[in-house]
Length: 480
Ligand code: ADP
Image (spheres, helix red, strand yellow):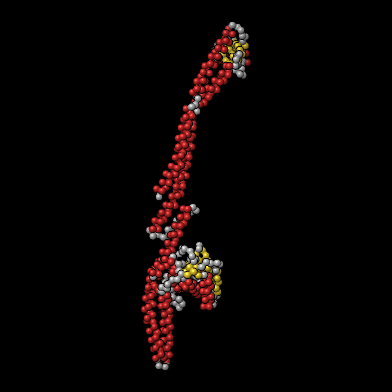
């Protein structure tokens, strides 16, 4: 399963990172080309030329000023050492520099040239207004050209652009991989789960289920698996029951045959013996003894008939019929046999017809209702319900009797031999066999009236079965 995840990851990576790598390559190639066209070098030489021209102009202006001073054409401003505290800062700075002569541009626009001369007792300042404003403008142009050159030098465009681009690309790649790993895991995990569950199912563990936890197609596949496992488990349980019943049937058939053969002669002989006794006290005793024996023989015959029923293999005839009608008819029948019990009905309106063997279903309902009426007793209540659930028909019988013990619940549908006055202990196993042969099933459910409750599930007419199919029914009949 790791292989599937790895393949998904590889496919996703190629699909997502391929275009990213191509776009990074194209962008860096374009950047290289545009950088090769840049004008930094030209700007550099231009700024140097401007600087040289500016310097020449400045030196010339300084020479002119010096000759004007030497020829005495200019009068200086005098700054006496004694009044040093009142000097402007540039004069004080010049005096402190220790030089004898210095030039500087001054004025708000830098269009005045000053010459400072140091004497022992004073500093002289000669000022001349520059005729043209070319020098300051040149200085300005030079400064801005130089700034531009410096700026483009300090900023390495290649790394300044490429590194963020690579960083964004790498971040995008990492994010893509995280998302891809998440999705690959999300896809491969349930497939892995399903494969493991299928392996366990194939090994015979029909109780295996997977947790769907999602609403998409994969969730639907997991749910379908669970349904299939559920149906397989139920079918296996039913087939096990039918197989066990079939061995009981074989035993029952043989016993019924053997016992019935002996019972008839016993009864006839005892009756004959009683009839041949001469009149008197002994005859009366004989008649009473014969009556007891005949009574017991009759009960034994009844039991034998029950085993014959269990062993019987009546052909199953599937027909479509109204289950509400059968329920009403069975309750009416029971009302006369147990008038001391109250009967309630809660029937599904517009219930679809069921597809089953009507006689078998009638027998099942008779058994369930009889048991319920007996358990409910005088003044007790029996409730008959029909309902539709998940496309199947549910027929329920609830009673207000004492309910079933845990042990009774576990062995309820197992054939047992009971020698109590009423019942043989075979009714529910015969009923379940009939339900299975009719394509349905019987189960014990929590009762609404405080007592026991049983549910018979049957499939409706003209739908595919979720229970024992007709093919399974044929198989079950051929097994038994
Ligand atoms: P029987 O022929 O003895 O009635 P069943 O198979 O029909 O055999 O029932 C088996 C046993 O299950 C009964 O003897 C009874 O103890 C118990 N049982 C069945 N139905 C009910 C019920 N509605 N309430 C309480 N016990 C029940």
